[in-house]
Structures are given as structure tokens and as C-alpha cells.
Image 1: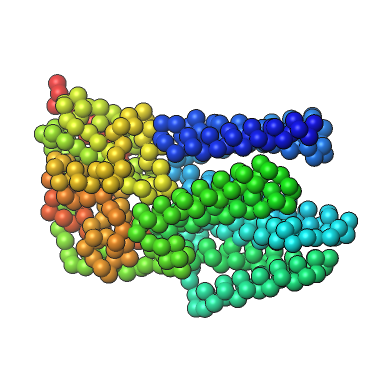
Image 2: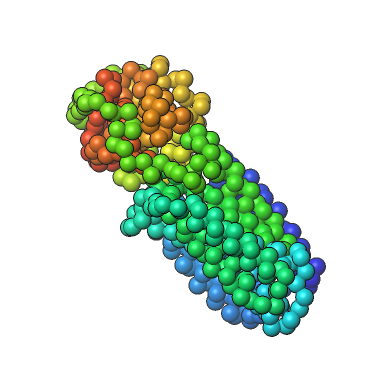
Length: 464
């Protein structure tokens, strides 16, 4: 039986690696997700067979109930709420690592009075504390992303000093835990301090930095799972935890690079702390030019090339299918259509790719920022749908802007820019958008889905 379980773990690990590899490309991501789910199922079954704590009936009942809950939430969650779902899952992973580490410590060291060696002790301490930081940090991130309360940056005097004191206190408790492992008070102190650190390190983050923090917490959950694998001597947990931890760090680095910021800058002070209304470069009065549906349709009808720039507003309006129909109409008129994708458009990397793929938009039309930026100067019309910070020229022009230096899509270089937006509200970073006042920019106000459908209707009428 032992060899059989080890083989199952090996198979699960290989499938996990294949699944993550497939997730690296848009057209194979869904298959990669499916493979990873199968690998997780194999790993769970192997673990339950190994520990032999539950009957097959109890195992099947638990899997059916848990699977039904997961299926329900996966089917009902909106694409706009995916970051919140990721934060929630991170929290579950962190909590699981904390509970497993504490349970193993209490069962073997406290109740059975078994000696705790250096490797096991460090693994237990780090697994519990990193898991606890991940748990409270992730659930606070979930609350912030929901926007119910604490959605902005919460800062106060001496905040970083308090965090440093708590961190040093946690490490000191860890050292005492290693010296006196039979006394649970030191582990409990470290646990409480870790839970507090999770809250206090995330609470000052707001605005555009939250997706980066979610990605970092995802990495933490993987590291905690990896350490739990050392505690339990479970190879599949070590492998998968390392995969999640490393991929989370890589994703975090990609997001920081996309915003031209360091991770330390994100954690110690983010966009969300900026409340200067003039920070976006719109310090003087500008003339906002509005365009109607009929006029917009005429502009598109006379164009030879159109680049569509999707953003979070398109996701909120669930306008992806309307946008696909609109793009199809333009292509029937022999108008070149491309979609410009910024690395952090939406709330997480890949958000726009998944959303557009859901509407059956061809992958070869989704062009990354670095590949399409030079094309804007030769583009007749750039249509911005619900995007804001990722097209804000203040990132290039205004050194006082908090987003200065962030790579953006050069939509302002197009001959005509049409911005589909509900109103003049600021973007996720909380700064004004210079683009809205540019002489080649026209504002198409209204719900993105309804507005694009109306433009499509006008185009159909013109074709009759």
C-alpha cells in the first residue's frame, strides 16, 4: 500500500506540473486548470488512504459536499469577482496550513512528548506563522476588494514601526519555541502576532495595489503548504506548495514590473494612499468633448483600423459579448480589428484575456502591450472600454503623478480616441486621467454593454 500511495503522489505531482505549464498560455489555460483539479483529487485520495482516519463512505460524502460547494461558487462567481475568489482561496490555504501545523505540534510534542528536531521545529513554526499571516491578510484583502468597508488605504502614525515590533516579537517567540518546545505558550504567542501581522500589513494597501498583494498572498499560501509538507513528510505537498509559492512570486514580480514599481514600494506605500485630485496631471481646466452613438458609429464606419482597449469597466458591464459582435461587424466592413491587452488591465493579469476568450474572440487578436504600442500611431480609432489608469498619459508626462513611470498603452497616439465610460470618475489608482481632455479624445458616456450595442445597431442600419 505504501508504494501504491507514493506512486499516486508522483502521478499527482507530474500532473500538477503539466497543469501549471498549460496555464501559461491562454488557449490551454482551461485544460491546465482541469488537469490540476484532477491532480488535486488524486493527492487527496492518496492522503486519505495513507492516514486511514475515515471510512470510504465518509470520504465520498466529504468529497461530494465539498465538490458541490466548489462547483456552485465556480459557476456563480462573476468574472469581476475573480480576485476576491482568489483571495478567499488563499485564506483557506493559509488557514489549513496553520491548523495542520498546530495539530501536528500539539499531538506529537505536547500530548505524546516527542522530541522536536531542528528541521521539524522550524517547519512547524514557519508553516503556522506564514499560514496565519496568509489567512488574515487574505480575508482582509477579500473584504477590501468587495468594497464594503476598509476598501481604501488605512494609515496611521508609527504603522511600520508597529509592524516591525510585531515581526521581531514573532521571531523571538519562535526562538523560545525552539528552546522550550514543550511549552505551548510561545507557539501561541507567535500565532497571535502572525494573525495581527496579516491584518496590519494589508490594511494600508489600497487602490491599484490590491491585485499585487493578492498575488503575493497566493505565494505565501504555497510556501505555507510546502512547509506543511515537511511537517507531515508529504512529498506532494512539498512539490505543489513550492510550485504555487514560486509561481506566485513570479506573478507578483510581473505585476510590479507592469506598474514599474518595486514590491517594497507596494507594501510600504501604494497608489491607494494618494488622494490628490490633481495628481493625475489634470491640474488645469480641460475641455471634455462628448460623442453620441450615431456620430461614433459614423467614425467607426469610416475607419480602416480600430484597436479596442478593454478594462475593468467592460468586465463590470459584462460587455464582452457585445464587444465581440461589434468587432465582427467592423471586420465585415474590412476594418482591421485588434485588442490591446495591458498586463494589469482589470483586477489581475490575464483578466481581460479570459473575459474576451469567454466571448469567443480569437486569441490571435489579443495583442500584449509591448507588441502593440507602436501600432497606435498608425491606428484610425482607439476604442477604450472601461479602462482608465492603463491608458493615462500622466504616467509618461506628470512626474508628480503617483502612477508616473508605469508603462501604459499609447492610445493617445491614435488619430481618434473614443472612451466608453459611465462618467468622469477616477480609475483604480484614484487619479485623474489626462486622456479625457486630449483634443483627439471623444467621450462616449453610458453603460458599456448598452452603448456598444447601440453603436452596433447604428452600424447595421448604415449597412442596409
